Amino acid sequence: MKRIGSIVSAGLFLLSMAGMTALLLGNDSFLLMSVLSALLGFLIGLFADKGAFKRIGVLGNGAILIVTVLFPFFVTTFFWNTP
Image 1 (cartoon, rainbow, N blue to C red):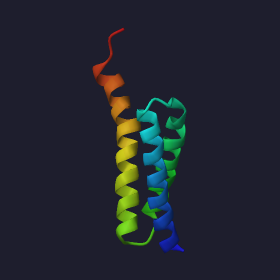
Image 2: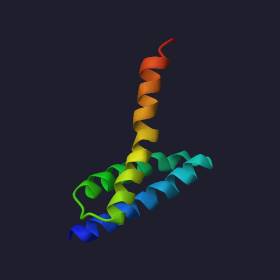
Image 3: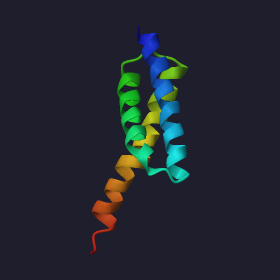
Image 4: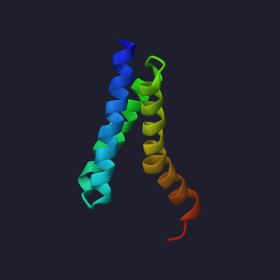
């Protein structure tokens, strides 16, 4: 069961990357889908079996979450604080 979790996590990473590619091409409706699938893939990857798929899922989904959630939060909170 844990082996399937690592494959699902890597698959959700690919889905998130496809959504981010569509987002970069100008379709903004894929942002929520990309973030939610990255979050779900990251959480599933944390509990998955050790292996390459787990590393791909956790690192890839973590990178997407950092770029789409954490980085904009810190920029708008700490650096872009003037009206």
